[in-house]
Length: 143
Image (tube, rainbow, N blue to C red; front, side):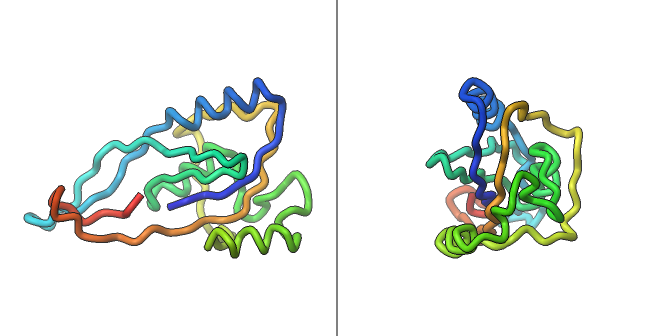
């Protein structure tokens, strides 16, 4: 899964935010192709800067990521009217993203990310396909 957002903030706080985001680890659900059993492996969240950010993580941990970043799907852009702007809609379409469903649960207190002096403007999310990867013997989400 991918979470797209724009950030702004105090430079040193933004740098600390980036360090925290780069070091988060999540459990990644994969299915063994031989046994058919699901297994969990650790995977690092991937922060991909363009200063419009894309954060990549396993789909099933979306509630943890929202909690970690203090994002409420009902109020994803609490710092302005960016969510409803034409520019946001165009960016969302260009990225192939969609709005976070308002009924998405949010789980807090599982990961900590420094957000003081930062504003996050959420653009949307994009799901990854799940495919068999015979090389590794698993069916997994293509992060």
